[in-house]
Image (cartoon, rainbow, N blue to C red):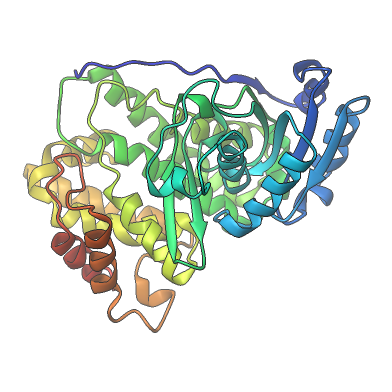
Length: 388
């Protein structure tokens, strides 16, 4: 097992009726800006619950943060934060809203020339260097409600970059599984796929003797496989919704990654597909994952075979055959969620995509991806072409 540090200060308030707890958790003298996305929270009752909990506080709202939070929109919110001297942010939404609020949390106290520097120069936000913020989760998927990472898009430059640091953990996050009942099937499928891939990015690398970490990861994946058909069939099933929501949080709250190597090449490539074609983030992962694992099967075969045996029950064949079967099982799982897994199923204009992504990585100086840091842009080009 590798050396590691583990600190996650986020307080989780899980279960029915927890939105009302906002009133007890927020500082009474805070000047609060509530931020949300396209307005679905005004249809499912969440907005009304939050407003009720904010009674007696100084607060205002900012809506319209899009999926794949857009930099230009966030700059509008940043202007409000500074002009109104906001001291506390409240994200009400899914991963995109929460990611956007993390950026705003850092940007509000940033003293440099351009807030985009935080992303482009890969600046870490340390404790005390950001506005405090909390979240009310409405769409399980990214785990952003209990981690310090964020991904922001910028349409004018075609970029989608990540940021993070110990100063970007939510102070508290409210997870009420009843919100899942109003989520469309497409978004539930995305959430399952996103969380499942998060686990695989931390698991399908190479063995380091971290047996407990492996079992943690396998249990999250097994739980997602078990709960996926239930929650797809009936999102109002509270037990299924609760397990689905908690799996998504546990998939990327820092626990699974401790003491083990991480990959994250699938995410890096997937982000570029979203930037180019505006494909849902989770679906870009489903496109790239089978090609990435097939291309790197020799380096990953031990963990892939272990994954195949423990999660999918594959017990026959050589280690290479088990590994290949595990990849096929994973792609089939995504397909059962009605997630297409080839780029041509999303766009007719896919020719040249691989070359463009490879060139982008080269321009950014991203010369080595994957857990071994040995995947060059030329390898990425091959992987993407495999998924046309």
